[in-house]
Length: 90
Image (cartoon, rainbow, N blue to C red):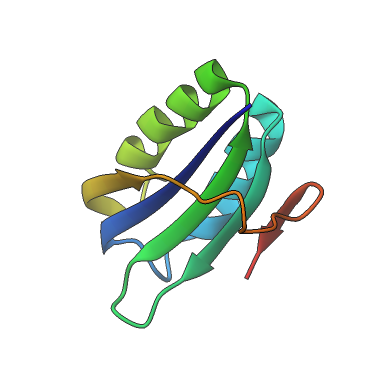
């Protein structure tokens, strides 16, 4: 299992971005969360098959139609971070 934390920077709040991530994650068989950050970005914590995590990373860079993604930063997600059993938007 692969785990990753993504920070998505750009115009990604108020455009359905978290719901876009949820649909993509569930379709790819991933579990985790997406939440808005105070700085206007979106944080995504994810776990699943490595190929599915890579696919989600590409989808994050594209975003939904109304979003403008400037960049996606990928970080390691420590094992101490407990993820939900499926996918949550926070």
